[in-house]
Image 1: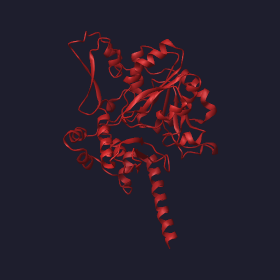
Image 2: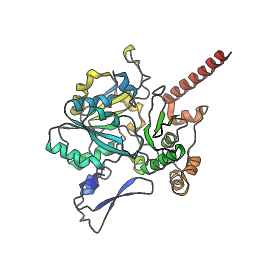
Image 3: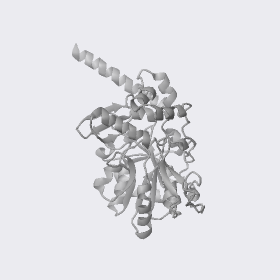
Length: 393
C-alpha cells in the first residue's frame, strides 16, 4: 500500500486480485511516469538491512497474565507498554468490526490487547500510513510500528528516511494468507453458527504454548475451540497454499533485518540453567538490530526475563530467518478450487485434518523440534486415557 499512499497523481487504484489479495493497479491515463511507486515498492526497491551488530535473546514477560494472552512470551506487549507510558503511540495489526485485519494506531493501554496475538491474515496498512508520517513529522512523540518485514520496508520507503522517534518491529514471517479466503472462512463459520464471528484467537493457550489452539467466539455466545489438528484455517495456513505469491521469493527471509527489533516464537529453545526453564507458557525470540532497538529493550528489561542467545541458535529456531517457504506444486489447483467450488466443497477437498498417529509426515514437515513436542503431546494423551481407565475401574 506504500505505492498508493505515495502517488500524488492518484494514478493507482487498489483491487482484489484472483487470489483474494488487495493489489495496486496503475491507471495509465492518469499516470505521469514519475517512478515514485517503483521507488516506494518494498519488492522492486528493497529497503537496506541494518548494519549494526545484532544481539539475540530468549525472553518473556514476568507478568503471567500478559504472557498467557500473548502468542509467545509477551515481549511485544511490554515494549509497547514502555512506549505508551512515555507518551508515544503504537501501530499494529488488529481486527476491525468486520473481522478484517488492518493496522491501527493506539495511545491508550486499554487498547493494547487489540494488537496482541498472531493474526494469520494479511493486514491492510493503508489506513495508518499518512497518519504515522504526520505524527513523525509534526511531533516528537515516539512511534512504535510493528508488522511483517515487507510492511516495515513499505513504510520506510514511503517515509524516505528513518526518523529518530520511529522504532520498528518486524515479525519473523511465515507468509501472509489471503484476506479474500479469510472472508469466505468467516462467512462459512457465521452460516454454521447462525451468528457473527466476533473474536478469533489464532494462538489460544488452552493447555500449552507448544501446540497451536484456536478459539472462536460468536455474537450469540457460542464458543468453538480447535486444536491445530482440526482447525480448518490453521491447517490450510500450514499447507502454505494460501500465501501471497511473492512470499515464496521473499527478499526479507534472512537473519539480516531492516527493522530495529525482530520478534518471533523461539522454537527449539534450550535452557541453560534453572532460571530459564519456565518454557511451556511461551518464549519470545528477540533480535535487537539497531541502537534504537537496544534502547527500547533496555528500557523494558525490568518487566522481562531475558537470556542471551547466539545468532546461530536464533537462526535455527526459524526457517524464515534463512529462506522462504517453497511454493506448493498444487498452488494453482488450490486457487482454481477457490474460484470454482463452494466454500464447503473447497474445504472438503483442501482441508486435510491431521492424524495424531501420522508421525512420519509430521517429522518430515516440522523436523525434530516440533516432532519432540508432538511426541510429548501424544504421550500425555495416552496418560490421560490410562488415568480415565484406572478411575473407571
